[in-house]
Length: 96
Image 1 (spheres, rainbow, N blue to C red):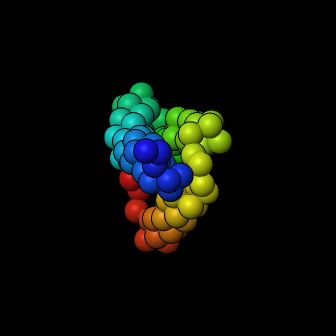
Image 2 (spheres, rainbow, N blue to C red; image 1 turned 60 degrees about the vertical axis):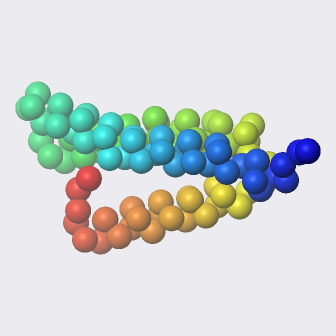
């Protein structure tokens, strides 16, 4: 018995969401702290951390998306969630 397309998208959605959380909360913080210890200023560290998230987070997700998902609903919902999350952090001047 085959799963319907939306149910089939749940496991890959969870994996990619966990990947994005790891890149956002762990990877970018490690890189930010690393470059600050190397003498970079806060602005440069923030810029490099943002580029890290773009490449290793969103870039990998965007590359996997057309091959793994059957329906656009989960990617749409989680992209909107990440956009609101990012906007909220930006408006409250919170650095990850």
